[in-house]
Length: 259
Ligand SMILES: C[S@@+](CC[C@H](N)C(=O)[O-])C[C@H]1O[C@@H](n2cnc3c(N)ncnc32)[C@H](O)[C@@H]1O
Image 1 (cartoon, rainbow, N blue to C red):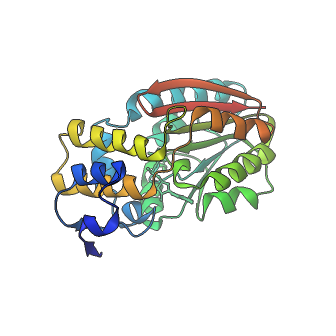
Image 2 (cartoon, rainbow, N blue to C red):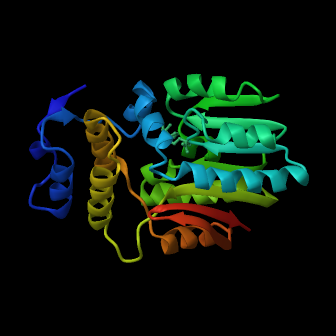
């Protein structure tokens, strides 16, 4: 992994530069792409989610309740985009199993771990693939598309395409459930990052400093959250006219999109 002084990475006079400087005052590993963090090891993501810094506990409790309702009406297939190691979705699925679970992720390491977490499911398939490509080329319909903390890695245009592709593969009463970070209305990405990185540095106090530095670098380089109104408009343009905000914990949202 390349080591580089942070000053080389970002213009230090910008707010984002200041926020990243706030986050790390020494040389630190530079992330290579949006999946490096998840390709090499799950230690870091597992550590921060175990501390519930991203509200996995509350959000996935709600996801479990929604999947239970879906299960009671007949639940054939769930497609999980950016499934990672499926550590948090697996217990929800085991409580209300679809006939078929399909997970998609670019990270082979994550998918290896997912096999362990999902082993109680009767039928599951894991695809090492780009999530946008996977949905755009898919022909089989699904009841539920789930995505957890993955869509913010895509560009604005790729997110628009994702909504169209998801709307196309959902059954008529299908549900697109999205867990993700969201920007405030009118807030720039730079201002969003300054706030989020500040929170990480001041409130994620139980992480090892090196892990925190790595996580901050990942967020600064690869997080491109949208506003709720932009996500709602993207969904509407794709034919998913109903957007519901099911939970919100600071920047962390659980959204449901339906036709
Ligand atoms: C923060 S993890 C989230 C894991 C899990 N869904 C959760 O909610 O805890 C984001 C995952 O998205 C994956 N990812 C990022 N961009 C992707 C893409 N374009 N296609 C497929 N997977 C992607 C990463 O490899 C990583 O496993």
